[in-house]
Image (cartoon, rainbow, N blue to C red; front, side, top):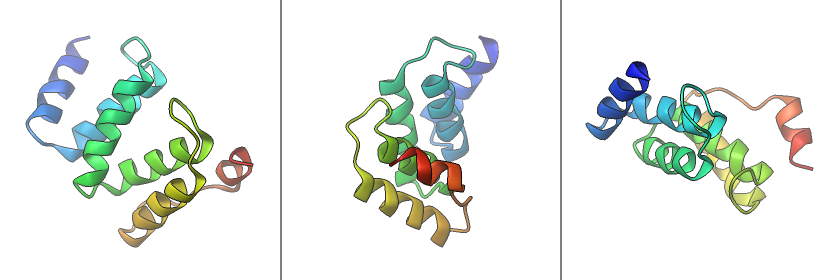
Length: 99
């Protein structure tokens, strides 16, 4: 809980890495109760700040429709933005999960 408190403070102060981590923590229910809406909120904030890992995670979530309506086109766009920034690339398992 203490770690989440500091992560939240860093995210609120504008750290895109903290925003991404906080989004993932909420989305997966790590160190806090799962809250997919909060997870999406923080991932979107981090992605809009240019965080490639957040772009990839958001792309995967949107592509699968996890906690939001499925939007494969937006998911693919987000993953392409992540790749342009040198971020992680989706695995074949990620692509299959969207079908």
